[in-house]
Image (tube, rainbow, N blue to C red; front, side):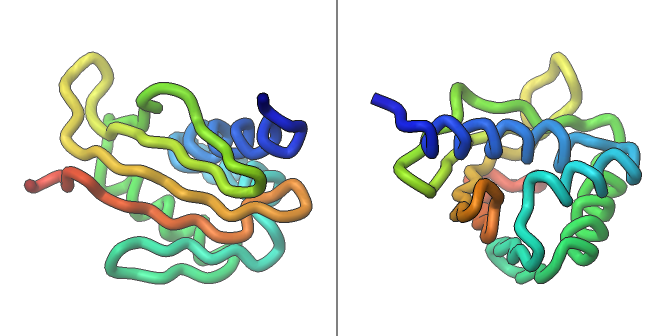
Length: 126
């Protein structure tokens, strides 16, 4: 059975994918980051650590700039275990096979993502 916290965590995972990582409008993305993330979030990529909302905004912009015409799509539903969320995603052109696959694990507190860990299962060039 899903608790209220787990429902909130699942919603945060979906919003993070759709409103942060898929949002190409910088103003809308900045607003979403303020709603979805805590004041001092940390984004852990496998080879990089990004700290703070502004650095996160810039990192997402760089990811989107490197993948014009690509979008993130969820593979199934987000999962939650108390305050921890998990969502597997694909990245690629709409309607085409994905060129990258990954999983996000989020640690939440006070209704916002405090830390996001991204695991890349299949990188763009691999």
